[in-house]
Image 1: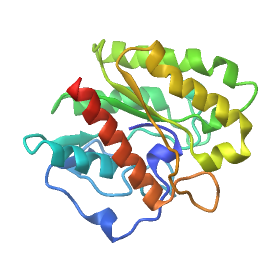
Image 2: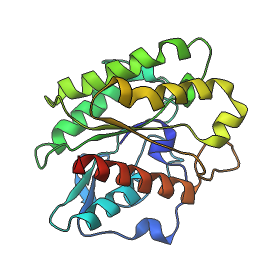
Image 3: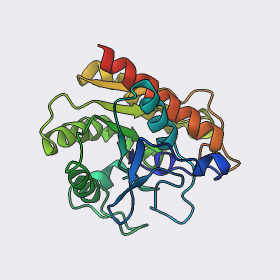
Image 4: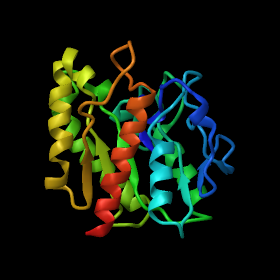
Length: 227
């Protein structure tokens, strides 16, 4: 689970957030496998409900023979530039790329990597950043695949929300780039955020919106597996 705050989750935690599922696990901050609950991420104290838990539960229900291991790696506020090797995200003092590779390699001791979920781009909605976003996103996919020696590793990117695009015209450009990714990079897919509900900050998905996003990621990955 990679990207920035809308992958990490900022939705309000409720009773459903703490309902565990026997075959849905997550790698916690201490790099230990525990039953998945929200908040799943620990990038910032405001971490809350994101798409990951719903995504995992739907996949587990689709195949009762598997265990789902979720690896939370998103960092709120991180630009795509922060996802370069050895790059630091000053706001959180995290190294998004290095940390994601390290945590995934730990997870691989107990399982097989089946895909990367990516939701990012809000921080790059600036006229200075949008021209290079496509090349950086394509490079990111290639680096993930090289790092884990999987040339066909599924990569699913989510579009920025309607409520973010409504007041940030550069977000429309980022969404165009994301939507065109499957035409340019094999074994990639896009999840649409259209219609999902947001918080009052006009930046983050609310609890229902985040869960709806997780459902869409699961449906897209299941569709990819059937091809």
